[in-house]
Image (cartoon, rainbow, N blue to C red; front, top):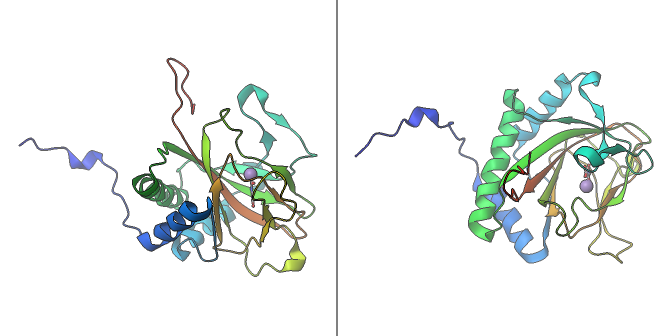
Length: 222
Ligand code: OGA
Ligand code: MN
């Protein structure tokens, strides 16, 4: 038998799969999962350290749409973002955890998730993100949205709740406090959502699992 050069493979962390099975059960039943302490604390702590080390200049004003359609639109969203590219060990740990989650979801729900992208987001007091979908049916390859939060002792009076609506006509929705360690995962094309005006600096990490929709020379995701 041939010897495969094992050292070219990235060492994969072994993660506690009970976090993943909770998420998969929720997704199977409802299409979304919202869980307090839904991300292992050592991952959340790494994200907090990574976020702390970012300078103000590392953040850019968030836009809407992709590539040539990209535009700033302060009436819709006013947060600032910083993409996670895996150059820091802490950022890489988060990407590794999401990669393990991606494989777990594919194994159990056959979703065919292909890739993942993620950024930090900072909402200064007064910032918000109006009701939106992360993907429109058939127009995008974003399939599953993930958000986790990095804020200690978030109070209802701090505002900044994520509101997840179950369908187009749902006006009430489910409110989620952006408390450290809470995770929200939902089908990108199905659940409209918004971020209410924050009264205090609010840190989150958002990410999207995507399908591979590359056709011929058009590499997508880029
Ligand atoms: C987004 C988003 C929600 C949040 O970035 O698309 O909806 O709670 N974020 O930060
Ligand atoms: Mn969104």
